[in-house]
Image (cartoon, rainbow, N blue to C red):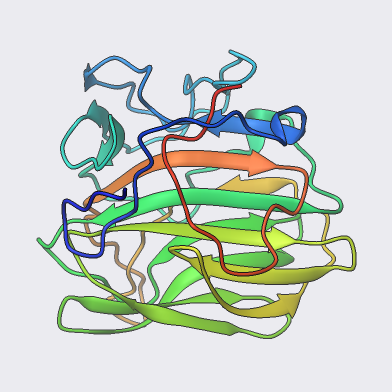
Length: 246
């Protein structure tokens, strides 16, 4: 049975099934083992890799993340209410280089205070020359925003609502085909062969004028972050949470 707290929110599985690809997991954070309350003002500095117990040493500035059970469909989540900057949010300190197959997954929630904004950058997987993949909001109307994956060809996803959890997954198989999933539904595929060395989550900037750039407050919540050096999904699948810790 799947439970839903906010309309089309992320599905929940009550039973935790051991991960058949546990040996391939390079980063995991379900947030449920973190302490409620104030979290260090740097993300993801000091955010431990749940698999290895090792924390990132990269410090970001001007962040205000906290561990909170609200909003969360399952357990705890990371909640941000600060203004996010374009150059921050790297997960590059996890020691992972994704040169072939991978699966990058996270759950994201945007509070309805401001609504989704065009050009919100939700995630980035790139090399040092900014070659790679980006998950972003391409257009917004009212509080909704259309999400897409930017690669060698762009893949358009669905409209995202506020106050709703979404599961995002990007996979690359051995042939270099990249697939884009939202809530387990495959929206299309592209190609990208870049060796990923920088992983960012989420940058959350909004361009409100062409010059200069200005940044809007980003009331995001994040949960269920996992990076695996194998392609988990090539077709529609059913997301379940929490991710297994073993």
